[in-house]
Image (cartoon, rainbow, N blue to C red; front, side, top):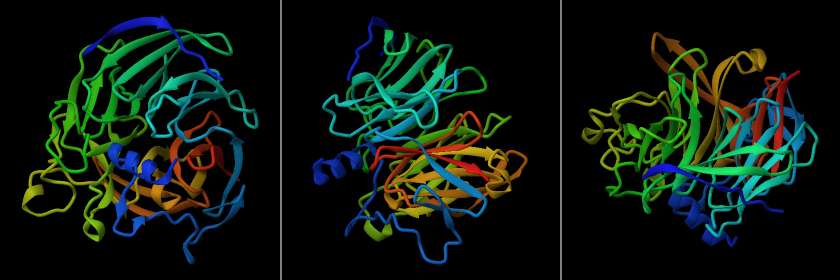
Length: 366
């Protein structure tokens, strides 16, 4: 199940119905009775203003295109040199996915890894790029400016476990990763499914830190703490009865109750933890970044959450009391078609990848 394999690194240069089915399977899109609830246009009276690059956001922000030409961008990472790395995932599971790098703002993104299957997590650690994809985590190293010389498979999971999602380095030196259930509503056969797991950077000591989470997608720590925030997709098969997606703080040892509890409340959820904030229904919440002033007073102390199916980034203002958080939700950025990854860039700007257009935007304070 775990172990390291070293080999040369690969290099490399939807039909809507199938895409929707694939996204449902990995927990990244919610479908209502009338189809996807995608609505990229800014809502009237949402308080947002034009901020550049065709986007609308809170007053005091400015937006520009950081790089373009990253098809189906699904994950972002920053390396020690300030370069932005972007993974692509078209959800066809045909090995069409890969990793691009953009050396600086405005630079063309160049593909440096090919042949991947749904990579939804990227992380730089000790001069290696960790890529969490379907059933595995690989570490790429020895980058010469165009290719990686080495790929080490540090972690493999049994077939049918569920999709590997976001990956993050924890304050305790471990890596934490979300793994979806392999279904919309079932009792997973795998111990690792529907959970947040952790492991050492070499892939050893894999353990479940929190269980019973149908689709833990984006992960981010509140700066200066060990408080892990996670975006969670709820069930997709209940139409209007589907609960809203969640942002929550996840702690070791918690059991969130899936499949019995999926955010609906009532007796099935009596012993389950509570979310920090409830977001839109059928939103397919995905990428997550925690800001504590780097975007100025405009963002304040908040979690910025991408909603794939709504075409926007939500701001969850975080109100902290000891180790507990409460969140209030309001629009932060609209005008994209399908935002998935968000990341704080080297200058403190927020980077947002639009999966549908292949553009990575930079959002900063004026």
